Amino acid sequence: MTLEAIRYRAGSLQILNQLLLPHQTAFESITSVQEGWEAIKSMKVRGAPAIAIVGCLSLAVELKNGPQRERDELVTFVCDSLNHLVTARPTAVNMSKAAAELAEFVVQQSKEDNVSTQTLQESVIGWIEEMLEKDVSDNKKIGNFGAQHILSGISQGKVTILTHCNTGSLATAGYGTALGVVRSLHSMGRLARVFCTETRPYNQGARLTAYELVFEEIPATLITDSMVSIAMKEKGISAVVVGADRVVANGDTANKVGTYQLAIGAKHHKIPFYVAAPSTSCDLSLESGREIVIEERPAQELTDINGARIAAPGIDVWNPAFDVTPTSSSQGASSRSWGSSCPRSYRLHSLEG
Image (tube, rainbow, N blue to C red; front, side, top):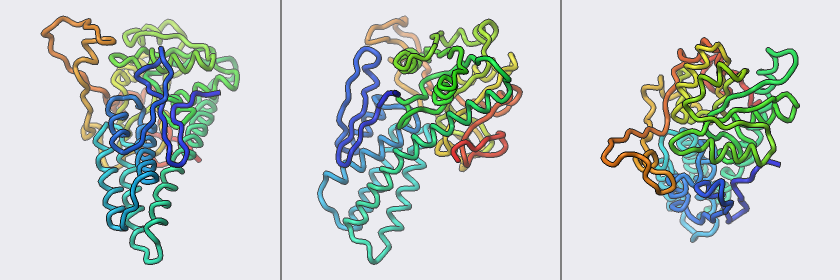
């Protein structure tokens, strides 16, 4: 049984507040677009797929429970709400892609003469609800095909995986992307162990990935971010599998800061480096990673832990939330990225079906 981080039914949305994990498991109601924006911005919910799903579901809930609007007013409200949601965490492309597609959908539907305002609103809500089912289905396909691909080069025995940040049920609608590959390997009886990084400064690995792995009794070991190279050398790592917040046209990949150094380490140690991501994380409008806007987080996330200052007062802080792994950094390590409409230049494999 995998963790449930998003609870939704028509007119009701609850999210697992990830700021409280692993010490407290508490669900929080989201009743409006603004509350959805705040939950994303504050990282109560995080992970590129989950950001898009929760953002859009917050819109569905407000539409369901809010006042009746005229057709033009409804279209304006939907488009304005989507534009606002995109600003919460701009690096993750899933929200902006979902916003663009849904905005186009509602505009086109509104032009149909025989579509009532009520029908239009129900169509928008239905479009959003389908995101939940599709995300879980895509994740399971990514996990299964990813596991099969890793095992294709290993005739027998078990594999040891290294992963970074959190890419499981807490970061998606369910099952996970990179952690979905780990889950599939475990269910096949072919996983020896997964090493997860603590993922400083926000500790998504220590707080969230470790929480999921313990919950599901998957053999796992936590390491600091600075241990990845020695782990590759000493711990028999078979492959590195990470997620992605954005994959651009040339294959450059933005992911949680620290991913770049994993790719370099994997290349040096000749370990396969994989990016497990749905096609919703691909952004073909950008030519290279140089064009990706990197979100910078508050200094306190780096200088403080649970409200207690650990850094010397007066020190300057640079706290980018993501880094960009160039295609060239990982190609020597047999890199792969998984998503049905990502660029072929990155030797991508379509695993969504």
